[in-house]
Image 1 (tube, rainbow, N blue to C red):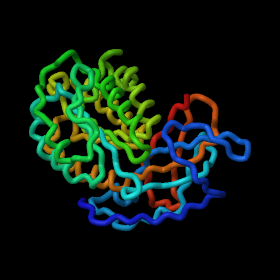
Image 2 (image 1 turned 135 degrees about the vertical axis):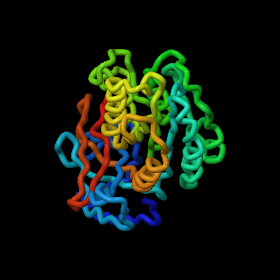
Image 3 (image 1 turned 30 degrees about the vertical axis):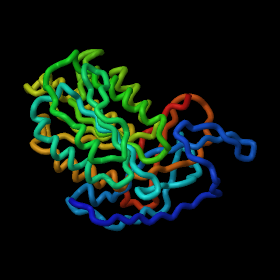
Amino acid sequence: MSIRIFRLGFLIVAASLFAVSSVNAQDPISRDKQKVRTVTIPISIYTKKELRSDQTEEFVQADRLIVREDKEEQTILSIRSVTGAPLEIAVIIQEELTGNFNLQIKDLSDFIRRLPKGTRVMVGYLRGGNLQTAQKFTEDLEKAAKSLHIVSGVSTGGGAPYGGVNDALKRFEALPAGRRAVLLVSDGVDTSQGTSPGDITQAIDLERSIAKAQKFGVAVYSFYSPTPLTENGNAQLTLGGQSALQRIADETGGRAFFQGNLAPISFIPFFKDLDILLGRQFALTYLSTHMKKGFHKVEVVSTNPEVKIDHPKGYVYR
């Protein structure tokens, strides 16, 4: 499933295009006395055929892209690709993971090293629900790769990883708008509100992390890896954690990766898919005509029925 060359053909039809700086903060501007905001979201484009096979397309004809917010079509301003908007990615690892994760460190280091030149990488660890920064955002990929370290596999105050994820997402606020992602390696379990799958997927910190990722235009890609709490076949906790990881990925335009309910033998298959998804991630900026505060639902589709687009399900405007 290696990708060699990816070319994407776009035909964007819009009433007019404006020379407006794109911002994730969605600041109000004026257009013919009507207030509008610029919104930037991450999208990944690939074909439905690729979901059903191990073959990747070297050419994807996306045709016309359509953005709807609250079911109303919006005006696309720009779509920036790998060359137009370097990637900013935070690699966040739960410190309490079992020793199985340590077997994946070399492959994770190699993933960081082969990211495109100009990529900014941050590395952090979630310890007792708090973020410990091992490497601030840097374009030195070798330095970022070397900042990875062996995890202890020992609980340091419980799970609740999403408080630290929320802190990591705040680091994107000071960066230029563009293509953004988080790679989260965790068991996904937050038992602060209970231990049933429903309780875990509705945890307050998870809700906050989803809202923060949507606000800053960050796609979350989650890798399931167990902690001592989930490695011994506790099906209820494992299901809850994986469902939470699936939810944060789906609602932010990312992807969740599991290998059943056990520790992955290797992350390499995950990285093959992730390389493709990040290579096909774009920063899409559009004008929003909705000034009401609160949650706004977003839909991005192509006029080509064979094209699949991952995108955030919406965002909260405050």
